[in-house]
Length: 69
Image (tube, rainbow, N blue to C red; front, top):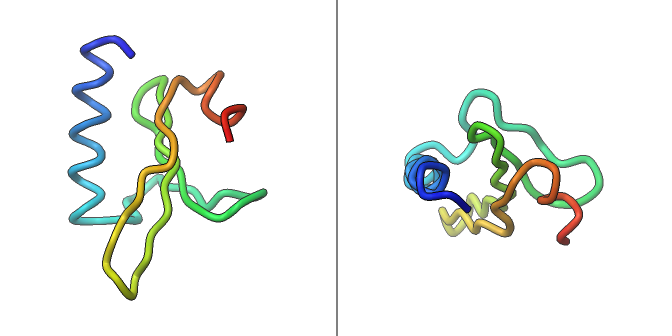
């Protein structure tokens, strides 16, 4: 991942700690989890409301991220 994209993705991950379901997030259709857009990149993650945790499952370019898992 290019450095400029990595910086944006890192900021987005930190923001998920404050708001795990920000405006624009989408519930995944074919599996558990959520996704957010960060430019051309996507973060796929799960939220455990009871434990108050966010687990990032995948981070990658939009053309590749959904093929990985």
